[in-house]
Image (tube, rainbow, N blue to C red; front, side):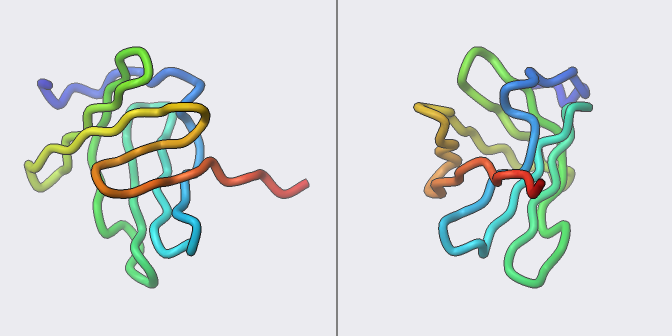
Length: 88
């Protein structure tokens, strides 16, 4: 991955959270992500690209990670995240 910001697929854009709400990962439409952990806002930030249902992450600090969406669930390394429902 080159780290270029690539327009993300609309089906991944939004807020993804762990069941306990401790980790919140926002996948933005501009190909950037912002991940909060507990009370630590923007614990990890960077860019991501989507190929089919696979996500490649490149953190601003230089490390990489991957994820896959299966049946509406984001499996990101050892994490399981679900899309947050928007409040009406």
